[in-house]
Image 1 (cartoon, helix red, strand yellow):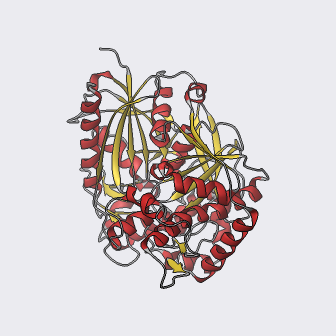
Image 2 (tube, rainbow, N blue to C red):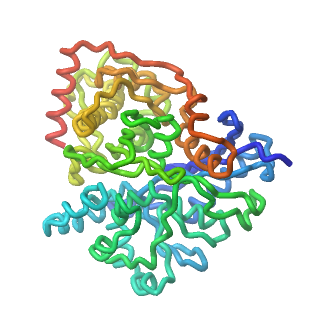
Image 3 (tube, rainbow, N blue to C red):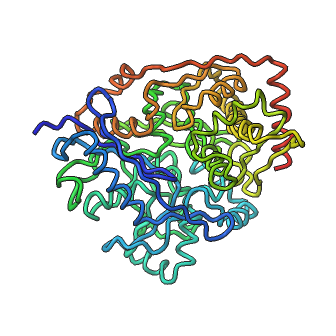
Length: 493
């Protein structure tokens, strides 16, 4: 039976997905399933690792069925994932010691503040390209080792495995035999040296992390292992592509040349620019990160992260009950012509780049007796876009480059009102591709390249097509007033 398809697993913050792609990069089958969000305390967010794997298996089976494809026809499997989310489990049995601590979780803010007070942040920034913030995996892993009874001794003895979600999925797909991460995910742990692409002894010592607990660091496109003992797939399929969700989207958007940039709208919003084969140190609160490693060459990126984007829409749906489903927000926002000077700062999990204020909180300002649900909905969409204007300004400063256009993807990229406001507030073209599944596409392509299913990254560049270009139409005065209201609100958040 000919192997004509690639399976892409896209494991996100609120749901697991699997997509089947053919050689022309068309999605021919898909499965998606939400899983439980656990909030044990204010500012804490956790996921059940077992549930993540169970939903992933369900999605694989559903995607194959919907495509009418047998497992034997799958040439390779690629993985893209929520990144900094931190798991710890027994190496032999796969039994988690604790629920995974999600990237949004802020429980280690005090620990990060202690390290900053000791003057450790310059070393962390120089070594990893990251800032000292509870966003990243390192302090989350330290918390698990310190708070789960017996964990530290077992980790030092090599009995436990730490992993971000990519590591957990490869471990399960390969019958619990392979413990591996790729450079893009490892670069988000605050434990990897950005230049050597190896676990850093000094940072492991700083955070009290025994190296025996860490997975192997590999390239983003290579065979990590093969499937073994799964219900939905036969044994022997190569697991051969892996990248964190934002790096996978940068690859899937064909941003292969320095200066090319994309923005992904998911649970958070993430702006990345390809900066070439050497990391660029940020002076503006952005992150230096690995984009991918392919064919022996490492590509680096600058990244700006807004912790809350689609999650703000979910808050309107689940927390306030203003909409029944997330897609309803555009229609509600269109019931008014403007936000009526209502401003929403989406700091529901603190503020990320370029502010890095874990203590910030969400804020609605400008409310009057005339404020309606429509004004609030529109302000939420505008708040998502306004965060990105801060990131874009910082990226231009750090890179020394203008950004003539932003490629966009993710679920909220389908929201035309949001995309138009994004173009207006950035004063630049926003380009939406025909295939907005660029995160899954990037993972699939990395997997396919490793096994010869595709020959070159140029195949994806040739296949990339624009669906719509949103051109700025806001006046300079309107833009200045909107940005002024935003900046005042951020100060108060």
